[in-house]
Image 1 (cartoon, rainbow, N blue to C red):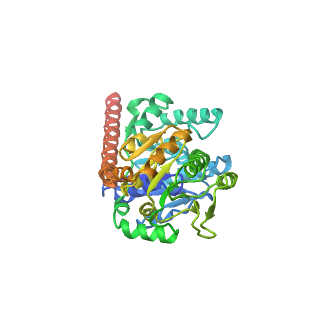
Image 2 (cartoon, rainbow, N blue to C red):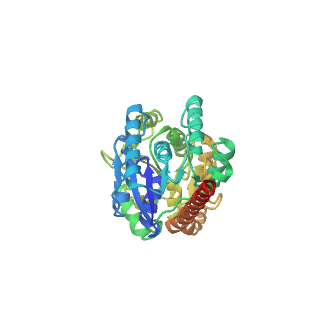
Image 3 (tube, helix red, strand yellow):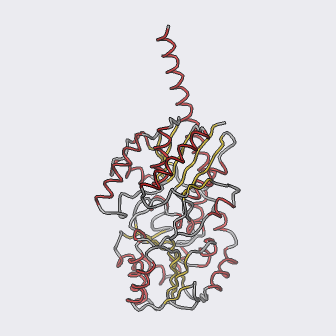
Length: 412
């Protein structure tokens, strides 16, 4: 039985956590997996329930935190080396940037046979200034040399890694899309819709629009508020907007809301029928998706945004910026309307076209579930990963056998 050490930055609400959890739980019995994660970021919802609900008890390394820290990163690196020494994995598979850096370096120095890293996004665009982005590109190029294989989660992401940012050669990259259990987003929608709209006092004839994600600069909630203002100024329809999530940009967001004189409520304090509601994190995202009518995303950069996959599983129309791997996970003009990054005027026009015409919203609800049901199911994910693991382990075995034969021959 092959042993896999799976290392993830932290267990936050999003694709990387689900990816690591489903691979740990559902990979076939040929593998034994130990899951390691870092410390929860204070700005993010606690998502331990994702792994706990699957019966997984990960090892937590408290020092493996989101910010760069020479002291904490060194301690985390030494702990990873010790775990590798004790566990003796055949494969170390890292997920996302911090785990990818510390985990791959530790695995390489401990001579682990197969080292794999999954990019769930990257920090080369929209996150940092050019100097810091260039440093991360330099670092990832070096880490790619330590990697047996790099996994991209979309065709566009592979193109970014190979051609745009030149992180590694094409033959080192494998495309394996994310996988989820999406059935809960499709089942019992009417019951969940009633539940959500009752809780947030949304009337039957109101059109509810939600943006979900961490309140951080790359999600570009500033542009979202520009869009909200334009829509409220233009439409005669009854609309309600929901900002779902929390994070470091919360104060800036509320300041801009006040500057725009948009009536809003903070659901942590009280729930009122205002044009805009800040809900903080919502654990039951399937209830949220059932309750709203349109899902939007205004990010400056994305890998594979889970919120859009979940929205399609719930057959909700989408309006989104066309960044990162988004065009790979929606059907443009069938499940989603796309706008260029930072083009608030066109984004608002696209959103208004769905708000104003009910038949168009209904048209965009037809294809979503059919599109994502098989393409992004976890059984497809585990099957493709099993195939990759077995191929890489066999290649390593053959290589070792050739080396052993060569040594034996030279000794004669």
